[in-house]
Image (cartoon, rainbow, N blue to C red; front, side):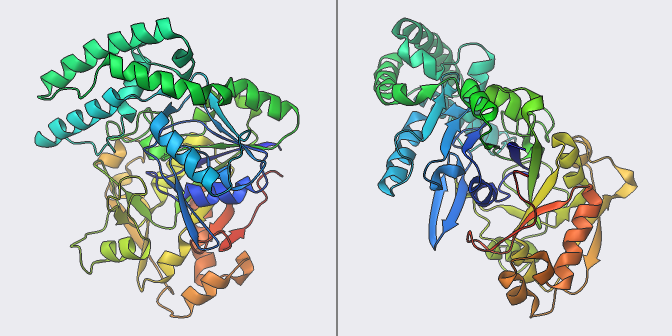
Length: 434
């Protein structure tokens, strides 16, 4: 087994950064296949916190090749900042990063349009909760065949023509939304020419790069962004992201065939969170002070790594998790933030929906959860024993029973358990590349 896809199994923010960091210790290549800097992966190593938005989480391991795939949309300003930060820490040597020639580029007008659209939608009471990073407009331009790829930065004639085309469309929409663009094609061209100078040495055919690594017997980890329930095709549409977040997205987002994938790990918190609008069946009430939803947010530090927005919190939704497992064909589950539950005196889990509603994307809009109480979490000894555990056998009985419930409900075995924020506070149940 030489390839593994790791994806989010909820609405994003499941702790992919830590899980990918743990798995990447055994990988030769870590390739991200979707999304942009709307994702934030938080890594805590030796007491130091590092957040990456574009560069794969494997960047912490010298010698590991990091690849940004064709399915991504890349803001060169953000990427340049991340590269500078990582190299300042002695990471990400010059030959350890590759960027797909076919990844699309986020320009200033994408970001401006994103903000104007979201503000206009909020005034109508229909805001989606976008991060305003230009992700949606960039993917829209890609589908409309006016997008600008990394390879286009090196072709001045194509670039000039495409920027002019985008200027007309973007200026017209900005005016319709009651605003105006701060810059135009001339300024965008100057940015593009500067980006091209430092992107040229690291740009490549990412699909061929990963294919060659697989053929050579190297271990390749494909890293997703956001979560299954935000998938543009299979998520809670229209409250979704603009790309494919399930395991199949690795094939199209990198450029490999499905037979090249050996396994899929899905990541889920021990509870559930969501940012922005859209259905959330197990959402807990919050008054900003003392309700369980507030307690979960406080204990789990549930604030967006990208936006800083507070996340809504709720109990683990097993029907939705089972749905996500089917969408990605998961062969293993990584459960994060189990320690957060251990700090609560009351723990519940959604085992089904009332009236037998199917957990498909439409069903989640009207689903009413049937909750089951989990006994034993109110023992004060649970948390310290859980945080110290490094094997399943060392976990408190109540925590093992909870994991068994999740595995039985989804039909997917537990592969990894996180019992704290740091790299060391991890229980590796299964080896990722065996």
